Length: 254
Image (cartoon, rainbow, N blue to C red; front, side):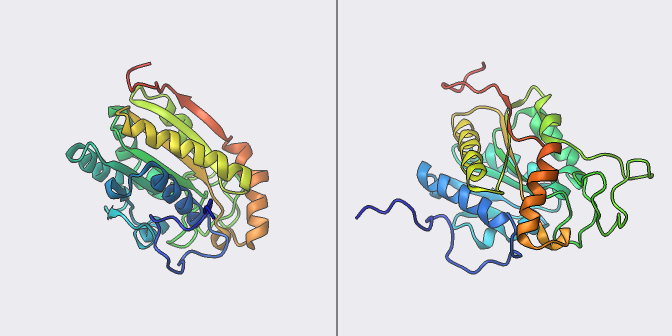
């Protein structure tokens, strides 16, 4: 009997450290399955920084580099330039990528560095205590915004749409936004990630897939209401789909 679904070789068989309802585990499963499908486990390298992303190397059964907080794009740049035939993934959360690492992310993208970023957006700081992140929604409560994010208050501002921001840069070849709130969106997100990884291996420029994920613990919700909140509140602010696609089948400029 042919097995059509099973545990990916690129994932260790270990118990998760992630909170109940967290989206990271689903995203790991998607990435690992695609790497197995592409036959790139021996050439895959993930760079995962401080934040909930720090646990990624406990689950992925391939090489990893753990950079300082926010410096993941710089590390991924170095790894990819030294090993251009390898698959290099920059795995970042919204606090890491869109706050302390903003300059690293923007300039790596603008240079057209040939690695792929998986940007996990749960609109909150997860590991450090639920502080307001650059992607926190207006009105959303956080430990540093107990009454909800208010753009009229000094220092709060508006939710940052990272994918739309990066899509304006010439070095960026592919940007998409998916979600892991239901089976249909999980499948679509997998297609976006596979497109981005294939583009990287064909030598095209910077590629990124943003993935909306729930953080029930820091949203102070049970898992099911958290998934529902992602759909009703997050997706209208961060619409799903391909945001920029200038890829070509032969790796050349479109």
